[in-house]
Amino acid sequence: MNNLERLGSNIRSLRRAYGETQEELGIILNVEKNAISNYEKGIRQPNNDLLGKMAEHFCITVEELLQSDLSSIGEIQYDNNAFLKEISTTLPIFSSEQAMKNETFCKAYKAHKKMYDLLSIGCLDEFDNIDICLEGYLDCENIFTIRYESISNFISLYYLIMLLFSSARVFNNQSALLNKLAKKDKKVRKVVESIDPSFISESEEIYNLFLNDEELQEKLLEFKCTLKKSYKWAELADYYLMLQYIWNIVDNDLSLEFNKRIGVEMLMNLITVKNKYAARLYINMLKAGGIMSSQIVDDKS
Image (cartoon, rainbow, N blue to C red; front, side):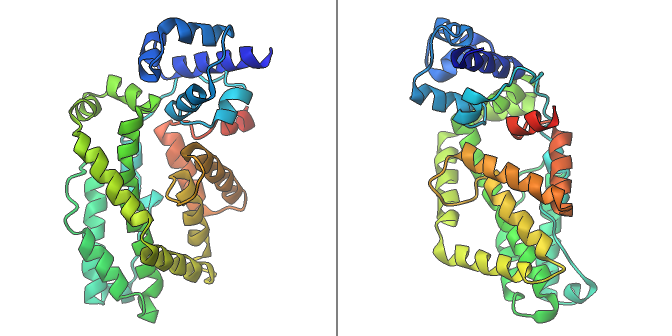
């Protein structure tokens, strides 16, 4: 199989895995159905711009699209509620008897826990107490006896906020996974069809504001370094370093797909050294049924 034939096979395999017709993929990429057919048959090769759009649509890198063998990928099955059900293991929060005796920490923790309880049943509307949580944990960061619980929970909440606001990119990019979910789930389809364009722009603005806040980023780095220096909490620091790449919560010039690839490699390395947080994330990803990277498919075959 030559390079053009491999690319065509990969496009066809991914399209079928996500349940898209050639016409539907053509509409998303703004090309004719016949063009998609020619790409899949290996008659023509998409230009670089179109290759980038395809890779982004299927949430992989251009390198994977061009060079990997994706012919073994079956139908992509994804439980869109699985992640929310397991939010407390994906983004763990901590408390202790000593910490709960502190009124400020206790208030922040209970509000944080309430958010998780609501998320676990699919409710995304009750986030009025985010400021209470963030400010409460910051107020406790210098209390030595509860410092690690406070800064760990602050990081966890920051990642949750960034993940929720980054969802705007999913809607804006019309990912293959989102389109598949919309076909199967009426609730998802209703959200996709009724999304307010201002929501996307406002979410992007807030996301970038948090990501580019130098004072906040320095504080987060300080917190991660503090965790890393502790034998008990070092695993968590490594976990969050990895997670920021998988979720693209990182300010660099790399593409979302490339950052994700870095994160997946880090995830597999952490699992090798028995990082319990990484292992739980991997299990949650398998429960959801989403494909993290074709490299993982290759490695497991």
